[in-house]
Image (cartoon, rainbow, N blue to C red):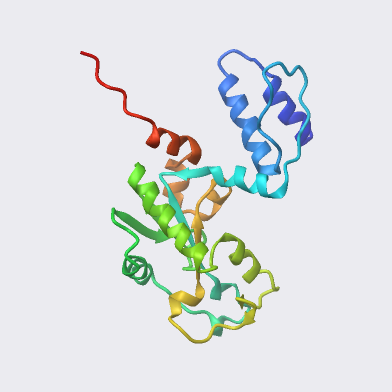
Length: 221
């Protein structure tokens, strides 16, 4: 069965007890392929609507790993020359993050996958404040030009690491040069540790924020 037929089947199927699972599959595949997940209620047949790149990215970034995590890459490990690898330990990463004064709540830092210090995972509590702390760290890396987009650019040179358009890693604080990070989304599940992969959920960040900002209903008397 090709992808389009599978997505069509997932949307059109009304098998008793499996409707929610089919709609979830439909949405997941559409997000992965950059297709719109919005389908009018009166639609009888379904056809993919390809989204603009910016909209497709926003759709992907809305489906976050929950409880929230920040994926941290040590890009020195992407260099083909092992002598250029620079080790940042889990403890050093946590000290670096806390030293920025961005985190107020509890976090746990662990190895990602592969467990060779090339990827580390910062875990936050599955509450609104946990998401807020994760967002602050995500924003920090973005503002430092070391977010998801910059990571992909920096590691796209066939084994020669490029930072801010320059080859090599020289000068400045080690962590400031080689650590790139971003909020974990559904497609990042293959980068997290085994426990997180098997216990985490995928949730809509927009829905979580809407719930956090919803007015509190007065208690009935």
